[in-house]
View 1 (cartoon, rainbow, N blue to C red):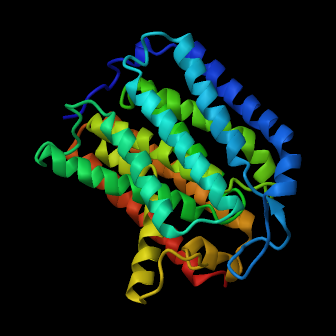
View 2 (spheres, one colour; view 1 turned 90 degrees about the vertical axis):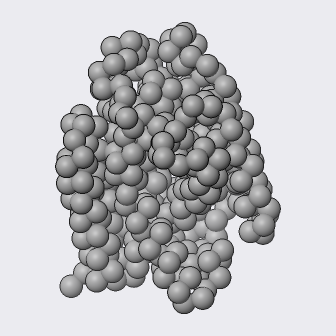
View 3 (tube, rainbow, N blue to C red; view 1 turned 180 degrees about the horizontal axis):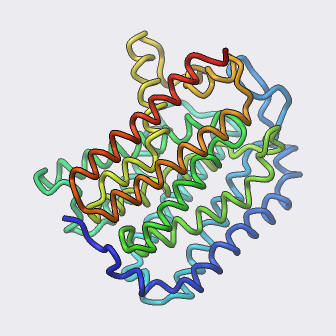
Length: 347
């Protein structure tokens, strides 16, 4: 059952939320300026056979983006008492995001094997899932324990796919900015819970502050310290949206990332490759080898994600299964078209 269309949207203190957006962007940029000399000294990403960059580039800018996001999120909570309600979910999200940021920092600097990475990701996602309300359901027909187990596996996959897709300059910006902005707009009509809308606004501001430093040719990368917790936060925002009865909207918003990463994983499994090892076979990576510029790729991804956000809004506004099917079919067709375009390359 769908909930919330125009229900609690009027109660959202948009003035306070506007402060969150500005503060998140400003903090993200300020933290980067302070940390960049240290990152250049201790966290250089050097080019290798699987890299898309050609010069040693500092990584770890995600420290600033994630710190700015969490700080501005809690600022928003303090400026709008009562809006966030029970703080258990936000505390769980913060703890899990910090856990994944620490995991990513160690992996960026020293490297970790797949087993400890997977274990810590399961713990972090499990904390977020455990903090959901007892009556939280997406598919009422599924037994609660089975749905929670599927959410755990899906959450770990989503965290990893956001990490996998952070392979060229501005790619994560081109994904996260439209998706988080779409979630904010869904909050404005009451489809996204206020907690999720506040988190999306903080994430949007943090990525806007990071964007100038990651503009092609990038002077700074997110690193795993950023992409892992950002994947977790984005997944939590989409999870809350789906829990409000807007599963189609929650699928449409990240559909390009879901398709590129999942199809690529499937192809690698069919070729019996070691899927935990770094590679350059995502569709967007193939496009860089087949004539597309990095800017040309991310602009196309950004425009596609804006279109997907519009379709998500349409599906949330109009509670009609036929609208859902049409929106999902059109979104899937647009994603398939872009994947095929990248696979064919420039002619």
